[in-house]
Amino acid sequence: MFTARGQPEPSTENRKETPGYTQRADSGSTWATTLAAMGGAVSAGEDNDELIDNLKEAQYIRSDVVEQAFRAIDRADYYLDEFKENAYKDLAWKHGNIHLSAPCIYSEVMEALDLHPGLSFLNLGSGTGYLSTMVGLILGPFGINHGVELHADVIEYAKQKLDQFVRTSDSFDKFDFCEPCFVSGNCLDISLDSSAYDRVYCGAGVQKEHEEYMKNLLKIGGILVMPIEEKLTKITRTSTSTWDTKKILAVSFAPLIQPSKGETGKAKSLRLPPPNVRTLQDLSRIAIRTRIKKINQGFGCRGVSGVRKNPPTFKRKRLRRRRLDTLVVLDKQVYASRIPNPFDFDDDNNNNCEDVADDHREQEERAASEPKAESQVNLLREKILSLPLPDPLKYYLLYYREK
Image (cartoon, rainbow, N blue to C red; front, side, top):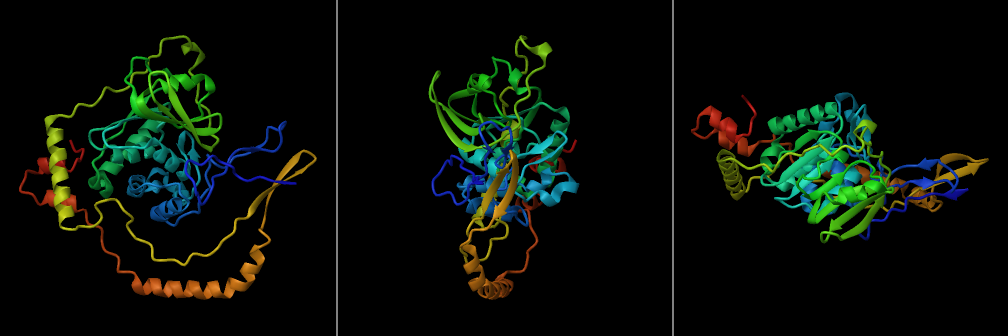
């Protein structure tokens, strides 16, 4: 009998929880238990805000800018309707070619990328566009946000979700947005004369032979985050020929799909979009929207910064000890089970009645202190619609894509 516990290489100290990792039963076995890429590092939430609360408590989200981006976009919006009940679990999801990594993985990636307004970002394996859209909220209107996706049906899905976000989400009006642009193709076929980027993320396992290729997509001073050799790795380009490498945590990703044999040896042909030059109309729209938002903020209007919609009430913290994951090997067969920490029994017996009473008291206090729910008002849209302007101009300022 032996005990397997996740031993990631965390990017910060004092992490409250640690994600799972790939642990092999013995040196000659091909069996592995994989947790990190699938998630499960934090508890499931009742809604998007509670999921983010759990990621913060476990120290996967550590900066305000990343927290605001996660709260601004509801993860469930990127699920198919029949699977939305699983949206707030810290688990990966895949249906056909559509795939979402676990929230704990996305939050580690966002933190490692060290995003700022005006940067250029390349997402290799952009999928549903969930990560690219969150990144776009940070990059602002003068950034560059490109994604490469192999499957054409997934690109169509991502475009639908992006259009839905622009048309219907109040969060769109609370941020200066850098809209993602998705390109269909194999990310290993990017033309060598394409522009380099400030930030690059690859959402599939990179083989060692492609490491240099990925590094050369970076500008000097740029950051690349990718899974390589079962480790999520942060690489910073410090000069034309030097890089600083840091392992973040152990993960397991599906490998990059190689170009077809018929394409092997051919010149790389996938061209990425050129930098977007803003028109005078776009610059005017950005300036007007920014000015209106500042006016609203000056009047103390709430809900502009993308913070938690329903701040949690105070909860008494209880001491909870982890259970140990136990793997039992019998005649080369592996059985997974869970055993409780023996120290848990006394706490449970002694504190059970007290916990029930405290929970009841907390519920009563919460019901008495919570304000009545207020209807969400999009102040920016209301302000624009009230302006004495022609309707087409109002729609243009609202960024609607009406023809």
